[in-house]
Image (cartoon, rainbow, N blue to C red; front, side, top):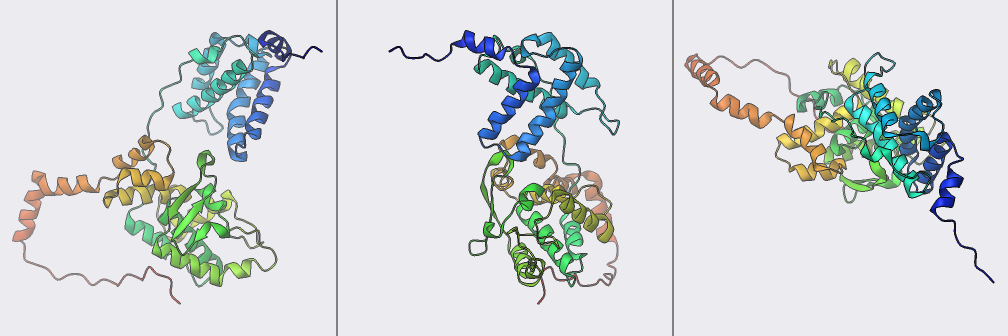
Length: 351
């Protein structure tokens, strides 16, 4: 009895040739889903890939075999001139992100013998510009935000615990939103980040101050929020469900600009930037910061070394001739009485 042989590359090519580019794209996304990619990653791939599919369909390019290097370069020029809803062009990183997804799809199509060659392999991605973090807080500004919250109010106590945790651990907004009760280990003083960016797990140190505020929130506020329903998330809404990304952005933005009156843009991520910059200024090793933040590449973490300029400021103040002359003149002035100042409020939870 003859055994049925699997189809060869030619048969696979002929069968796949009947599928449209849109169908290939959906199959690829389904394959990523089967490989246990996170919903957020799949959403990101879809958002970057489908505009290309639509662009091709408008030009009657319905099949993968119709896509040549010239077509891909034409789309690359389209991205360079594309304006977003706010009227701003795509950044080089945004352009590169969209083109990289196309490269991934075409490599997958080649592996499945859906195409005979991969034109995307010859496509050169735009050079991605490295930008500094938009804003960072000084240590005093960070404390100003934290201490501006009225922690006698239950929701503001919850928000204080959230912001303390963001500053202490440097975790991302999405990672904080997914934290469950079981992800906090007070005995070891750590937070377990499950399926962070790139679906990778990591363990992050939890500082004493954040731990104390978190314990107070869990003792005084969380039981009230969980009376009707408890989703198991660490931070709950008034309905007992986990907090959404937009809610976290809103509460952080309100604390920064409306409560603390600090005129800087940003929300949750500014605490991540600030934590990394402040630790580097205090002598932390870049590789330790990399491990805490969950960066895959050291180069990503090294961006913060360009923001952490405290050592440069100290050298400048100590050696620049204008500064040394200023100190000499100040030393010749009679000493004046120090101004009265209010004692800073304690930075630990009371009660």
